[in-house]
Length: 165
Length: 252
Image (cartoon, rainbow over all chains, first blue to last red):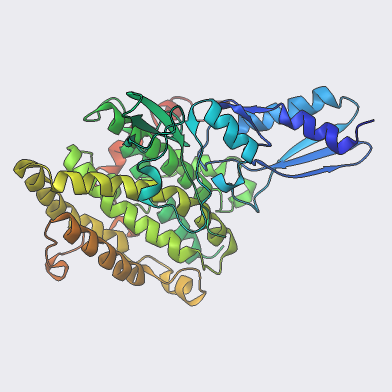
């Protein structure tokens, strides 16, 4: 029999970001804590960007998923204000999924985001680096648009975002 | 919350809110599609930052939706916004220079706030600084390209810089209660920020090949922090509030 923890984890792995539908809230690193006992489950989450319009909606998606999987339990989703999200929180599996969806995943940022991290980045289709930045802002706050000269087409990059620790 | 801290948070939020709205006015009007999207994205970030800051101000008498009230129902005369923020977009040259001068000031402000004694601000500064990095990179990219483009583009950037500097220096106007903030270690102060900002923009403007006029000969445009808002603020707020003004108590 699966443990409660695994069951909750499985549920959260099936809640996806509406703007990046290949990534679950687990892979994005949006979940900061899960607490449970026999009668209640409380999940803490953090939004990605301060102005992300999807945060409230994702919170609702998580609660709906918990209520569907654990109807007998009293479930709650809290916004964790003690931790900030950055792209270093995205899981390796999540980065692989991004690449499969033809979005170049963000590099792991140790110090600070630099201009170079947006220049000559590898194309997710051909892995070539004969690319240029078309615009640092894309169709959502978290993505930039690049152009691959080898494939002769545009592609997206999940922009690196680093929070000082 | 004391007056100095309230004023500091309000003015920082007001600047983000109003510059954010001005940025959003480029939606559909950018010189090319990518810039249209860039200004719209930065608008979204900035209005998000203003929202986070407004939420730090405690609501009197537990007033509901106080952050929204501060943004959309507060009297115009209570705004603490710098004249720089409220100026109409004019051309893309002016908008870019404002973006460059304003965003470097904000980036440095949040860098200084990382060590603020007021924990909610130091905490928020980490997040906002990370996001603003993309705004300053964007500003620099186009400043450098246009300053090194054609004779006309360089001349227009230089003219926009000369025009905008008095307003930009107005960002560092003192406000009621500033000394308390400095004494309490919340923020090192506008003068300290101004020094860092001058150092930063001087280096970048020189690198871009433009000429920075002698800042000591420029009279800053003050008043915005102390109850004398830009003449452009009231019409702007009236436009932003058109919907809520129809029915201030409507439920959403």
